Structure formats: structure tokens, C-alpha cells
Length: 480
Image (tube, rainbow, N blue to C red):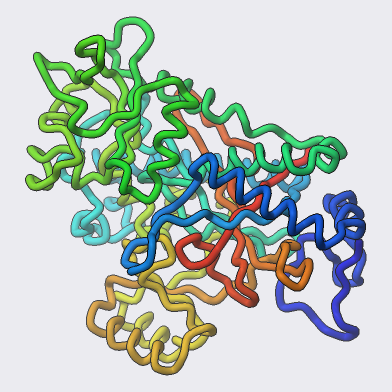
């Protein structure tokens, strides 16, 4: 199948399937041929079947702040995104370089702060940042790993142009959708899948468990006991918490299921109390331990942080990792990579203006209709302005917020995100995408081939977040 553009039209985005001359890129050759023979009725039927599968499995997410029912299915797009082996090797090298540098940065800022002494990062950007935890200063986590589970958001703008949009080093989500998307595609289109040599993703739970075991406390005797700590069923990612615990064969617990006794962490089970060595937490720092952080927290475990500092239990990801994926720090990541590795970054950052700097603020305010402005601590597509898609009224209101708290925002150019073919009501059409590969860091760095492709299903939209109307695709990394 060839998805042609109108004669003489020059694209402002990179189409991952279709070349400018109207022919198809090699990685998509089989997919394009398959699409050309797919009747629309079949795709509608398969779309309904996919929705039924996900509904039966309970794959939902919560939308906060809405009056309507807040549990929704994440839309699943049936056309896979295809990445060649050579493209993936490049991404893999860049991702590993980045996560190693960011873990080195975390160790440094909680110890000697050499990068500040060298004048590469302003001291106030670290020490006055609400994501920086003074309680972590001087502590050495097992293997000196702070962020063990990372989701690196990558966008593409050209044949060889990839940019890191965000580093998610706190409690990144989405891996369950990556796994279930693959299961769905193998079930729905086995013939198409069999025509490709696609690298597997299904070993992720096994790799996650190995990573968690590898960072058990030094005094752990025998095989470590692991638990996944969830805030509970009302959390937007609760399905994923339960899914990963089940896939790893470990317990899913809430704060009330855990307690500290005689210098150890235990969980309540039907067999009595059982010691816990590694906590994969999906609870934010502030709520982990009411004795150490927010005293009103009902989600954490009293005494957990002191136990962690004493080396009696491992918390994954470590408290205080949020400073490294803070959007104000993001602008310095290229310097962070050079400082700790002595290498130039393999993957580029998106150009970024820090609005707390007067010159940058003036530039951003003058060009709000052209830029994307984000809250430094924001996530999920909330609290941001996409200038080209905003009304004059929205821009004026956002400008007021920006002037009131300039240091709370960063701004970036509106990137022409690449597109992939997607199923729409009118047939097949290009839609903008990003990619979240999942990285595990413990005794070694493990990167699952592919990751979660998020797609902006609304025509012309650049916002891929599920909370803002986005969907997901299966991501196929091809073997050589």
C-alpha cells in the first residue's frame, strides 16, 4: 500500500512509513502491503475485538478532575509502529548513555556535588528544588543505583533525528500496556506478525524481577522477597501495579499491609508475617513514610525510610530521584552527560528555555503562540500550553500564570513529531507519535526492545497522553 500525499505538497513532519516520493520505507514494506488489502469492515471488527480484550482484562486508566466516570479504556491503534534494527541500535546506545549519566548525577548531588563545584549547574537549581531530598545526602543505595526503572520519552522529527523529550526516573508507567499491546497484536493479526522477525518484549517481567533481586540489601540472606507497593485501587495506574506483581510472582501490597519490627520490614500474609527485602514502590516520595515526610500520609509505612537508610531494605526507585527528571534540570542533561561520561550526547535534547531567567521569559512571552510551555513538575499532559493549538484567550490566561510564577515553567519549540499510519473513522491516516522505551538498571542495564508508542489520535494533535485523548500502538523492533 502507498499512502500518497497531494501533488506538490511538502510535508512538515516525517512520515515513518511513506517517503517524500510516495514510496514506502523498507521497514514498513510488509505492513504497507497488508494495509492495502485490509477491508475497512475487518478493521472495525478487529477494533471491537481489541476493545473487548482490554475491557475483559481490566486495562483502564483514571482521568482525574472530571465529572463523568473516570475509568476509561486506553484506545488501541491496530497498525504497529515498525523500527528497524539499525535505528534501534542507535536509540539503545543513546538511552544507555543517558541513564548511566543520570544515575551518576544523582549519586554526585547527594554526595560531593562535584558538578556544582565545577560550575556546570547552579547550586540553587539543586538545593532549592522541591524534588531534592536532603534526607538522602550521604546515603549509598545498593550498587549506587538510584533510578532502577526508567521510561525515556523520545520523539522523532526526521530520518536520523531523534530527541529525548523527558526522562521519567520516579515511578514511570505504561509498561503493562506495552506487554498487553503485543499480546493483542499476536492474537488479532498472527499472519502479519509471522511475516516479520520482531524482537520479543514478553521477558520484561522476568528482567524486572532480576533487576530488583540484584539490588537487594547487602545483608539479605537467600532469595530476596519483593513486594510492589501501590497507593490502592483508585490510583490511575493500579492495573499496572497488579499486573506487574502478578507477572513477577510477588505480592501486591498497600502501606497498611507492611510494618517495621525489630529492624526489619514485614508484610502481613495469611501465613503470618513475612520479611520484605525489596519494595518496588509506586507511591510518591512525600507519602512513603509519615515519620520522615508527610505526617498525614495514609499510603506509606511508618519507619520505612529509616530502615532504608540503615541498609535493611531497598526502595525502588530510590527516594529523591525526581530531581534528575525535573524539567528545570532537563535543560542541563547534555552537560550532565559530558561531565560524567566525557562523551557528547548520542541523543539530543529538545531546545529549552528556562522561564525563571529574565531573558528567556521575555523571549517566551513574546512567542507563546509558537511554543509548548510546561510546568517544571507537571506530568500527564496537564498544566501545559501547546501554543499553535491554543486560542488567544488561553494564551492570554497562560501568560498571566507564567508571569506570576516564571520559575515554575520551561518552554520548548513545537516539534514536528513524526507520524505513523493509524486507523481512523475515515480509513488509514497519519497520526503523530512518541516512544517510551523502558530501561532497567541494577547489576546491568537492560532495555526492552521497543517500548510503548503513544499516538495522538485526534487529527492534527501533538498531545499523545492518554489523559488528553491519546492512544497506544504495539512497537515492533525488527531483527537484522
